[in-house]
Structures are given as structure tokens and as C-alpha cells.
Amino acid sequence: MEIKDCFISIIIPVYNVEQYLEACLETVVTQSYSDFEIICINDGSTDRSSSILDEYVATYSNISIIHQENKGLSAARNVGIKASKGEYVFFIDSDDWLESGALDVLAKSISGEDMICFNGRRFFEDGTAENPDTGIIEEGLTGWEYYNKYALIPKKFHFVCVVLRLYKRTFLLEHNLFFEEGVYHEDNLFTPLACLKARRVKVIPHSVYVYRIRPGSITQSANSKRLFDLVKVANKLAAFFIPIKDIDKRTVYREIAGEYFKGFMSEERKKHGNIDNDLIKQINWESFKSVCIYPRHKRIYCLLKINPMIFRIYLFVEMKLIKPFILS
Image 1 (cartoon, rainbow, N blue to C red):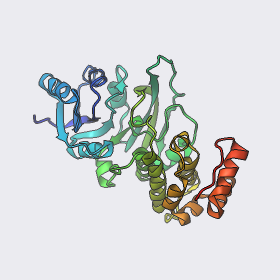
Image 2 (cartoon, rainbow, N blue to C red):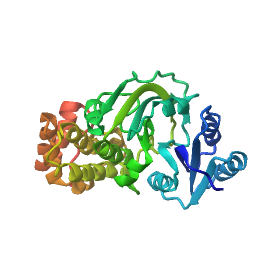
Image 3 (tube, rainbow, N blue to C red):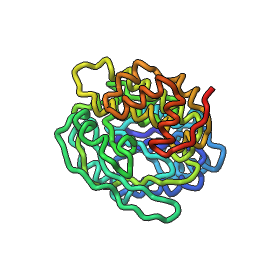
Image 4 (cartoon, rainbow, N blue to C red):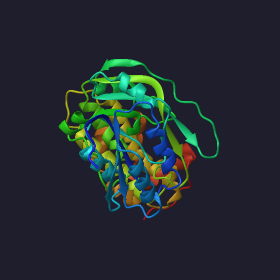
């Protein structure tokens, strides 16, 4: 079905979410604002997701489906960007949803910015209630000013999540801002790069997005690949940012170093046993050293570099995180 140009393109990757998909789509198609398209990328679903999408396409003229073999979230988003026709692009995960009136709020806030940044809240399936983070109002920022000002402020809904922003499509294409395929933590890589390139950013206080926390989702599952991808993403961020001489790197360095350290100190790492040696082999040590500008990071870098066993003892004695064991 041919869809004309529109103001907002909503990109929804779909993979085996039959339990949540209709609820997600309903919150979009029932928005009072109407100048938008929905692009659903069926990423090789094997459940009823595909037939649910077919039903919505038959009912709503502004929905289209792209079917592909399972390639992952990043690849699905990239396909959506290339297919989109809107002036702005909005990424929505297929188990999440929009608040009533969300698109009206966003459309009225736009005045040519590269990114519109907004608020959201988390929803827990066990019924736990949670209020949104405190809203922020600010405009006239560059993306890098926005990043340095807000990236490291503790939040319930992590700053790095791409679903918390509306992106000008020509901005994404001009700077070749696509998602790294085949890795977890793709948002950790995409968001700093997008912020660095953005010339105009507006931050609005409205909570328009609801993020479902559910067992078994990509972000909640723990496996060794997630840990290795943390280090891979940190290596890529370091390789990109270290050569840039005319920006203040302190914020992004802290975040890059943090990604390295998460691979060794996270709950995920503890669940998957003695993989420290393999993780250590993935580290780009020159990059790691360059981003260790904070005392705690320097200390951990030195311990890892000297002897991983010493680092293990440090975690056990100083941080009470894990029991030490002898590394081969």
C-alpha cells in the first residue's frame, strides 16, 4: 500500500510479541493527531504477530508492513529509517505504548530541531507503580550540550534509550546515523553519536512513552553475549571519540569506561560464571587507558592490567560483590 509523505514516521520492530502487539498498536492508531505513518518491520516472527499486523493493515490506511528474516532490533530499525517518509522519525518497541495525546504534544513542540527529547515512564508487569522522572524544559541546546548536561544524571528511564527522542529524518540520513547490527546495547552506541551531531535540540517535560518491563525481553535477559557486546560498544565509542580534539570528553569518557566495567561487575557477569579471561581479551587497552580519567576507573584499569586475580580480590574485599577464584 502506497503511503504519502507525512510529518511523523513511527517505526515499530516486531518479533514474537503476540501478547503485547495489539495493545501497542491500539495506542498509536487511536491518537488524536493524524499526520503520521506506522512502519512495522516483522523481523521473522514465528507466533501470531504477523497475522495481527495483517489485520491492522487491512483496517488502517497509514500502516505498512515490511517482512524480513530475523536480523535483530538494529537491522529492523535501519530498514524502517530507509523506508520512512516522515519529516520526523519515532522509534517504538512493540511491547511498549504511547500515552493518550502523545503525538499531539510532540507535533506541537517541533520547530525544526534535529531532536525533540521527552519524558517517559516504566510499567512493571507485577503491578508495581512508578512515577515518571522529573520533567525537563529546555531549548536552544546543541546535542552535545544536551548530552553533557543530562546523560549522567541518575534516572529510572535511562537517558540512552532512543525511544525517548523524536529524530529529524534528514538529520539521520545526512550523518549516516543507523544502528549497529548484530549487537546488544545498540542504544548505548547510537545515542552519543546522534547527540554529537545534533545542532538543535529541544527538551520537553511531557511523559509520552510507556516502557514495559517484562521478563524475557531483550533488555531484561542475561547472557554472555550481552557482556561481550558491552565491551565491543565501549571499544567503538572510544575509537570514535578519542581522536576528536575540540570537545570536552569527560562525560562520554566516564560512560565509555562504565561500559567496560559493567562487563566485569554486573549481575549478568556473575550469573554467567568465569568468563573474565575471554572478556579481558576483547579490551582495546589503549582505548581503555585513555578513557580512565577518574580515580576509580584508573584504579580498576591498573588492577586488571596487572593481574585479573588481583582485580577479583578487590571486588571481593572492597565491594563485596563476588567470591574470588583462581583464573587460568
